[in-house]
Amino acid sequence: MDSKITENVVLYDWLSFTSKKHTPQELIEALGLSHCPWAEVRGARGYLDRLYFGAISIHYNGREDMGVWCELSGQGCRNFEDLTTLPGKWDDIFNFIHGNQLHMTRLDVAFDDHTGILDMERVVQDTQEQRYVSRMNWWKVERSCKGISCQIGSPKSKVLVRIYDKAAERGYDDGRHWVRVELQLRDGRAEEFSKIPMQIGEAFAGVLLNYLRFVEPDETDSNKSRWQMTDYWAKLVGDIGRIKIFTAPGGAYNLERCRHYVFDMAGNAIDAMLQICDCVDDFLTLVSSRRCKPNPKYELIVKEYHARQEAYAQKVQSYFTVEDEIEGVF
Image 1 (tube, rainbow, N blue to C red):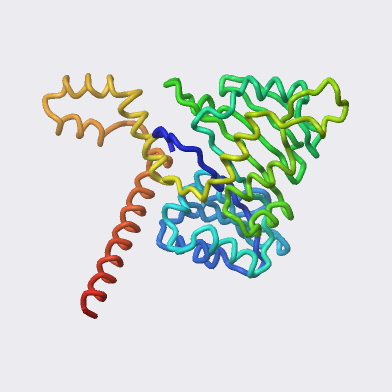
Image 2: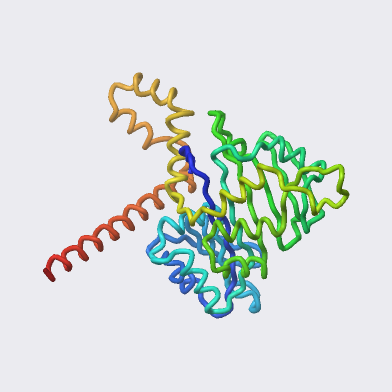
């Protein structure tokens, strides 16, 4: 998602669940990712082992009562959308979780404002002066080299809302507007959201309003719950409610970041060496004989790229197979 997006989107940005009745391989099959090159690495949080691919982790070999823990980070969600063979993608994996009565431990749903609905300084001011109505009393505002972030709801609570400057977090200085409003849901709250029979935008807007709304102060009324909603929050909620599920590029995101580093940040140095070397072959020879050790991060980008290319090739092949069958009928 490093390339500029001009429309506002809602997406799933984290999913984790546990199973005491499935093997790691069975969960990989349930995700529709059996064709991906999984690697065995060290586990975490009491699990000894983990199968890992593209920011998706399947932790196993913990205590007998821990089962298997599946975790998709934000980038893992993008890779899942990009590479899964499940026709219904999120609907299918949620149905698998509910149908097998598995425990969903966390679900993050995010709204990305690319059109300028939210002004972070206004959100900060309203948060600090508590010009909002919420079930949650805990709040925090942070400023750092990564931009501004507002959080309403304790990190230990089942629900929290985080609003932050995503463009600043990513280090963009090209003037793009990218503010993220993130709902982090845990345990029962996560499961409840995934069962709401609505489009993701409608569900997000409804749950967000249930937990938080920014309001305009009214000196004639001491009851803050009766204060009018701010124009920006009303516009945001209305915009969100019309959005359907957005599928963002997954592995392409990592590839884009690698391309950005090579050509935009190191491009001048590479251009200089190309001019100094007698030919491109000499340059490629120097690259292949470089002294630095292979970086697993870049090796994974290559694996993800080839996995996507293979997945796309299979989809294209299946398309032409269906077309041939249809032509054969007539």
